[in-house]
Length: 281
Ligand SMILES: NC(=O)c1ccc[n+]([C@@H]2O[C@H](COP(=O)([O-])OP(=O)(O)OC[C@H]3O[C@@H](n4cnc5c(N)ncnc54)[C@H](OP(=O)(O)O)[C@@H]3O)[C@@H](O)[C@H]2O)c1
Image 1 (cartoon, helix red, strand yellow):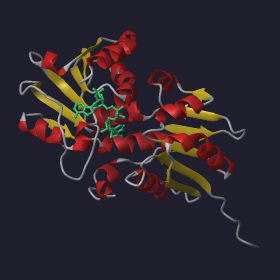
Image 2 (tube, helix red, strand yellow; image 1 turned 180 degrees about the horizontal axis):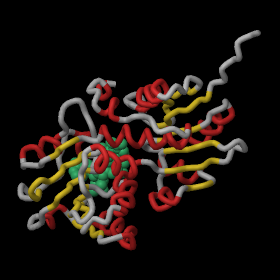
Image 3 (tube, rainbow, N blue to C red; image 1 turned 180 degrees about the vertical axis):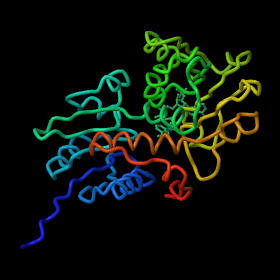
Image 4 (cartoon, rainbow, N blue to C red; image 1 turned 45 degrees about the vertical axis):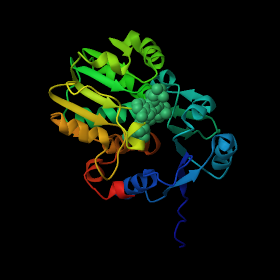
């Protein structure tokens, strides 16, 4: 009897640029770990103007699901037929699932990914704590709802462009105590958890932070990650944070959530997070 042919189920990450993406490595390791040998996962460079066409082509070629990263998360949101509750408020999605009839389900797993890394992996308590988020871009929008579900005492969003911080705070104010401000307003304040969601680390920069920002035993968490400590992780260590870490854990956890949505099984994340070779690509 002829061996039954294995039908491959393709997944991919779309983005532009995409060559730096760690997602193929992460998902291929998840697939191996969970015995999903019929799953493939590749990175495909898709500029914004080619998104619709590339999406249709991927589906017609048998594509089962997609991750979308910069600059496509908002376009993917618009293209989705069915949005999860958390994705609706984010205005951006990173995980798509193709239904049999071609309709697209969409979710945003960034917030749950950060929350899981903070609370489950790092054992950081968010409930009743004072949180500061630096930056008011897409990443902040994606993590606010998940952080607010833990009922922190307050969340302050500080941003270079102050109006973006106050607008975002208003958008989520029904879920808890959230305010927006500029960096100058941080001088007399102390925070238990500071999350850097700016793009500053990507350019080797640090937002202008007062030296007295951290409460005792504070946690500093940079959404960005790199082989060497990011400027913000170094800043946290310098000013006495009990934990100062980058966002590799969030990256792996948001991928695990996407994998769960696609394959119905949650992979082990700690072996990847603890493997320093992952960041080296
Ligand atoms: N670990 C993960 O899984 C994960 C997931 C998502 C995102 N991220 C990371 O999160 C970061 C933000 O991504 P994003 O999508 O939110 O970007 P974005 O939408 O472009 O927003 C960038 C934000 O950074 C601020 N900013 C940029 N350069 C700055 C500087 N030199 N000093 C102070 N503020 C600066 C901007 O302020 P203005 O509004 O004033 O311009 C804006 O608030 C990136 O590093 C990204 O790689 C990580």
